[in-house]
Length: 422
Image (cartoon, helix red, strand yellow):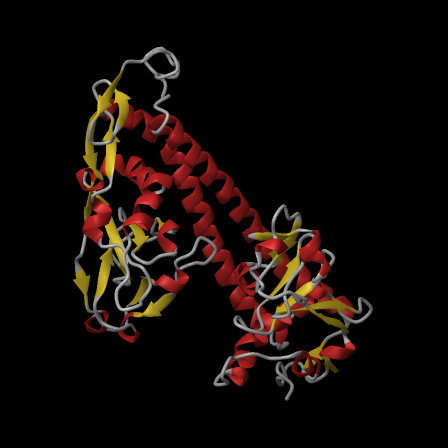
């Protein structure tokens, strides 16, 4: 089977993947794989299949690091290696941004640069991924191996034309990656700002000096078990936000296209999918432009979503909690509270599981999180700084969604020869 053969690319050469470069399977010999002895004091990046799946083009994030003992039972692959997952998340690919180790559920591919490139093969795999996953589906544990990979046949154009395709597609992906990095920096700035104002209470006083550090008067609060600025009140998330449980049956809305937020896509690195309303199961929550979404499910409590919808045409899974600010002007302040580490810890600590299922937080428990509430003037001053940071993140994510749609529209036509790059 030639995965990308069409009537448009018959003139391209037919090549097996094994003829286009070299394979090397990841190594993780030590058992158990999570033995602390592998990681204590580690400095060598280790990536897993989930890190590959989460990447756009380059793998530039890792959660774990091997130490010398860990490295000795593994291997450090150079930057530029194409990673191909062969278990769990099958046929996902990404190019290493820096030297990393990876386990035997990942295969490293180094291209013969006279014939192809790691980036071009990344896009080939992106195009045929679903076909590979379908062929592997149904086994006890869906997986593939190096023999399977090496036997794959592709239609491959001349190298100089491959490079033109890569230049176009990677230009889009690099812009997506840049936007994501900027969003990450903005998110860190926003968290620091919130902490400075509402945890340390060093917001600018009437003279522009940090309130608490400059001797601003503090009073003990029994509800919060700490001191807060004099004149501030206390309350809960429910004081400033209301939980909106308005539901709708999408199947009764005809064939209108709606924005559908679902838990699998509820991630900072992924855009919500568009689906036909009549193809979605009944019983979804309505999402309005001023809503803020959090997941009921652990470990996704830290995922916070600011919807893109500009009109009342969006819905979400009932695995979300849908919040709406009680005062529209307070939205940035409300978002900052839901985005705080303190609120996240509350969600994790209060989550419960039933009948062996994943931990969930009940909406009313989420809404009971206690908070200090500043006077309106202070909140509005905070909003004037925090709001633009929020909007910048939102616009960058919105741009990424459009870029992703453009790339996903171009890629199949370029990989099967239907469209050409001059």
